[in-house]
Image 1 (tube, rainbow, N blue to C red):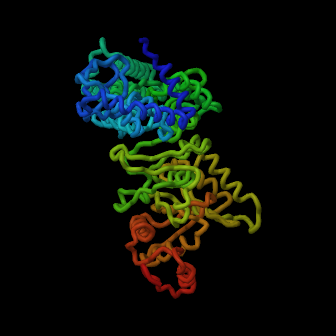
Image 2: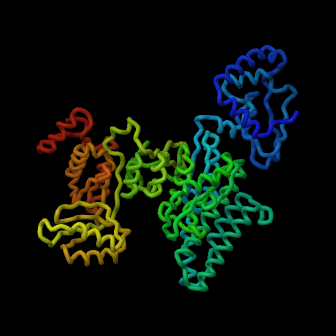
Image 3: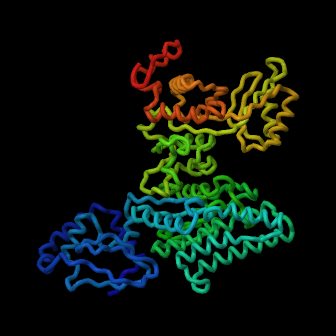
Length: 606
């Protein structure tokens, strides 16, 4: 008898799924009627189902020899050699499996398609997650494990392996300044990884051939830089692209070795199109359509392993997406395909209540809003860059931050609206920046003269300086500039400002930012100042952001760690002698005691 094709089988299953209750009822009646016959012809139900070793080219099946009970497995692309004892899998087995809700004829891939609980996801892994062959293998097996749990990765976005991007930048600098072309370290990392996975030689392994071709092309580019003594932004973008392009090819090949069907893609092959601003390109309007069209041509059960950080501008030249570029690639794909979730895999258990390097008791936050996550990133937390969150925010696609070293941890979900259980929290997280500059700018014009603020900010725009925290009045402004700002430009803007204002600069300051419920800012501020008063910490400036989710305090660098540890103990650890105000019925009385100077509240009592 002619066996149905995979497409015909899928169509039949899809038809059945359209009327699941009817199909279920009919099947139950039929199988129940056949049960006595099955028992009569089934002398034994205890013999195991056995799989012989096969030479399937697309992975291993995972049927367990478990006394006749079959677990879900994936069909390989080529026929396998199967056999079993003389007693066939009986109809009774089929009835029992059906009653358990398991279709014994359905592969795990088909089960993913038909299971309403399965999530289509995009996954992103950074360079530290892919630092060497051990980490690449770990991530490949992690992806395999996620598939087995019911996730379906439509795209896996990879950064360059380890420090490859930095090494490529150093190689470019060496070719430009020293006239030397050296990518030995880069080549050795990728060769060692391919050797460890036993990819075969260049003649038999297309992946090794492709990686060799890319590294040779990289070397040729560096020779060009050495000869013409020029490294333009366009050439620099092409140079750093080789890291991601090698990385995805190795990852895709390793996944295929593990039986996970995968294919490597450069980002432009899946629709990532940008403008022509080399070094800091932006996605062009309408990129969503090109991404969707590209993925329409990719089998939904094939993992597309995509280069992060890079794209093509209209003339087909390689661009880079700037800070947060790999995260942006993942969110752009996830948003364009309207996936269920975008997963960003890092080395911590999600977004934490504070920096774990400083606060050893920092805890994962289960859920934050996009606005809260953006503010955390702006003020120093190692979360997604705000630009990377824009596609997910626009299309309301949840982003989950997970730990590649601890994949069973739930991580943190970033979404548009907080669930009800999280809306009552006073503070979500505490973040900080060190070594900032504070500029106090006081107008020398008459009180009430207009145009002062406009002039100040036009000068900052002229010198391309970005302000972090701001507090202002009619004739004075205090603002902060982080250490990433160009020192020369800071000096220039101060000189220009002296035509209309007195300017004072304070160095060695730090910013503490509380991501908090600003609608309850009285309770937050009262608690913070009670902690600061107890620890003798002097606040030199504060600002409550227009975003309505952050409150920032400027203090001296030397008191930064003490302040953060004390605040974290108060808001999250329940170990501090000052309790947070605003909880329970005593909140109003406690706040009044602070205002009147009769504060006697200690932890747990008033």
